[in-house]
Length: 165
Image (cartoon, rainbow, N blue to C red; front, top):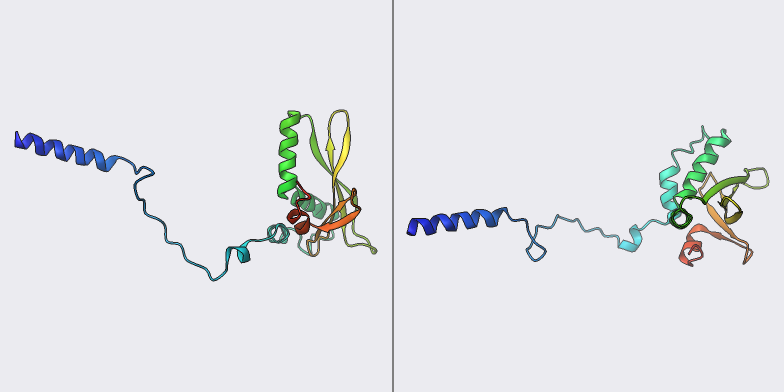
């Protein structure tokens, strides 16, 4: 009888060790190195993040090829969270019938170092300009033109003041 109880105890211990931890059980936390920088210091602005991501693709050797730079700048604009979210919502609401189209209106000239790119909401029956960007391929400065207020804003300011929402 005592042997049977010992076997049952070992079986229960074996089953207990096979059970995965539940939310109430303590799990081992990974080692995290503390940084002297605060979270606010380490958060990159959208402009800095885009610059870090795309600066290699707009190398001096590619700057002569306006089409290559143009396509990289448009790709950059699609990565802006507000534009990306708007595109997803538009696609969802219209069930794929409407989409955002990027049109380069002006390329850099002696008067201006910016590409002027319009983001157009295009549906089967209509198209309207939703966003207007001025993008400098040299320093990655992105400015948004707000025609209702007739102002030109830096991307980071536009995001901080919720103009994109």
